[in-house]
Length: 213
Length: 248
Image (tube, rainbow over all chains, first blue to last red; front, side, top):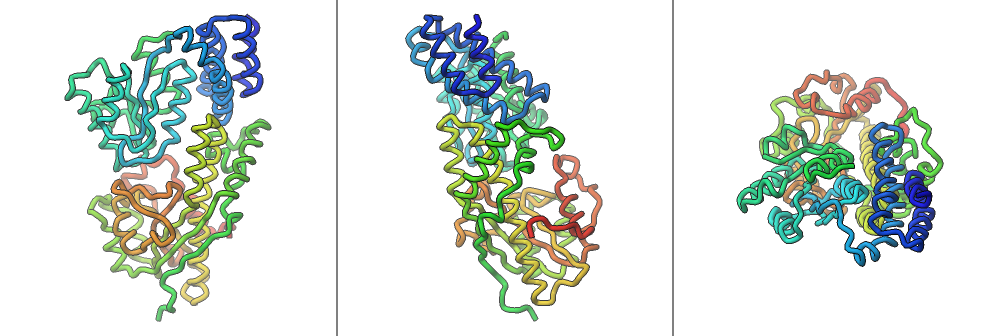
């Protein structure tokens, strides 16, 4: 449908006003919220993600697209609740205890939301048990951990251990990311995956939850 | 004999720590050889104005003897076996510990922008703040060099280079003793148990001053392989080659 194509394209241009206008138009036409979400907002962000991965566009372009996505999502959310639209799955994210850096974590959250996941962002300086408690309470199957300091990286191991101790593996998986991290470190602490950036986080979560796109 | 100015607190003029748009865009992953689109440039310019309005850069430096620095550098015993920091410091004429910050208003504003779903501006402001902290550190280093020059302690073929805990083999746990000696709490910088400085956009370390030849080394330390920036090369090049100092 042309209106949803325009919505997707408005995201690619990072045009928040156009995204809001197209979303409003689609709602007024009576289109189902799920369709507006899938064929408009998520479709637009998927193109943005692909172009970013191909180095055709850069981080500021992605974030302008995200702002446009939020403009549309703000209008769509009441309808999504009313129509009980299912998300692609829930992901709990946060920066581990002792660390206050949150830019990388925020960017991952934005990319996950853009891919249709429900993101429960616990913020910074989050205790291991809080991650696990939230995942259990909310029925999230993925916990995403961020750390920028070498001194706070060991907290990630504590989260993995807390998940194991409560017998929640493999139902709940822990993925990790942050500048000082590596795939080797992720494997060493027993994390399910290391994500280099927001795009790889989306791909990893999709794969783990069996989401196709 | 050392003049009586072993420690100075220096407020830094906001305009001195505003980075060029091109520098900030590169930090945001836009390659230098790519012409950014108009919206991206406008975003960077908006963030620059916001940064200049909110930044409260200030720094402190304190002279330190080699013996005292050895104690600070040793930290909690987690440094790499060999580092350019202790090797260079051991041949230096003068050493000073330093800390700078661009203030606590910026991290708050960045968080607020993310919460308001303005991620592009938030991220750009964060990049300005990070680059601004680097410029503040450079500015402070220059003022320390000026002070050394004014006392006749820095010759024509001398230069200065700075290192920070967490880099180049100096374990981040070294922050504790650095803070004990320098007391940057006086300018609003505190240290958490994880050795994280607050405000987030703060830098601490040592400024090593001496003859140019002491700064030259090969990047053959074990940790150099893990380094993604090799930013030391540019700074060392500036000392060795007398490159113009854009922030002086």
